[in-house]
Length: 127
Image (cartoon, rainbow, N blue to C red):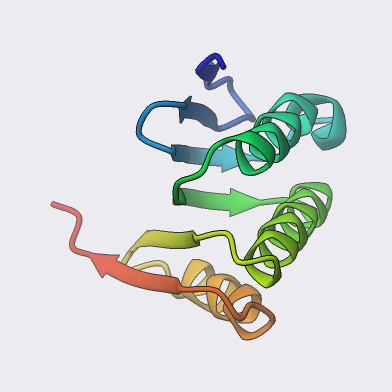
């Protein structure tokens, strides 16, 4: 299968999916006009990976701001991961956030509460 790359825009995060390593990374702000249109290729990539690859999928998040429709897309993505986890697939989320941005930590914690798969939230110090 192919790697996935969606370039960051003014209101969209960079999305980078590496098929060989099984790592999907999203970084930046997410407040596009149409989150579903933007993230549909990402959701398809994740579903294809989980359906055909026999190895762990790791989602690395460095999201700073998410609007309501982006939060809905993330909920859909976590539902896909939860379903895969319940079928025995290995999935993991690592959400990194700037220690000065407590709102992102709270959002990540809210998502984490609904997930039974490994979901780590780590702060970093920005210089």
